[in-house]
Length: 222
Image (cartoon, rainbow, N blue to C red; front, top):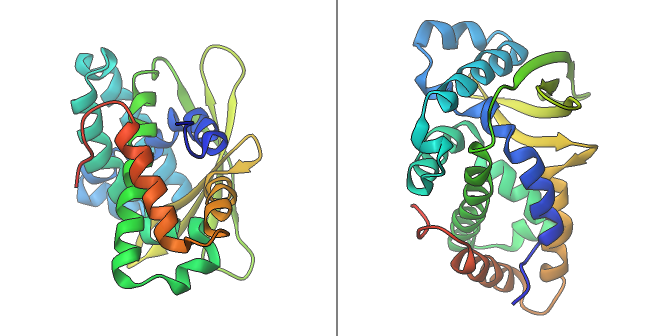
């Protein structure tokens, strides 16, 4: 079976080596530092990016590709810093309103598993990168901000935009842009092809389940 959502997966893999730099260290940061970060999402991005790079550099098991350890790291550290309900709802689009509570829960679970595996494979690629924040701009008529950054190392810098919003006084990642392509929008176009058929939400869930079953590595985490 051909891999589902291959275009979106390629985009995700390009930014996967960088998105964890933004998210992994949030929960490990001391409370006073978190309070300071809450004053500015750009400070949050800068602080946790540096901490994540240092963490991966010091972990030989992750560098060696220990998939179980990588999956655990991504699942426990990265994903809590993403508002996954918002991410999944945006990726599914208007059809989200038609989904039952059970279907919404299943969609979030399977979509999370898909992205965890994508991100996990990229952690082994972190070496000597550093992150520079280039601009922070509010999104008009919303509480969101976009933090623009560059990841610099060997070769050309990689430009990244992070869209964040505030939920209960905590900034959360809701989308990432690399090369002019927003991750959620990329998946949304892929999902729409499935949702446009007669199977609707159930068909999308089935495809995601199949994709996750055929993916490499251990079974999904809960």
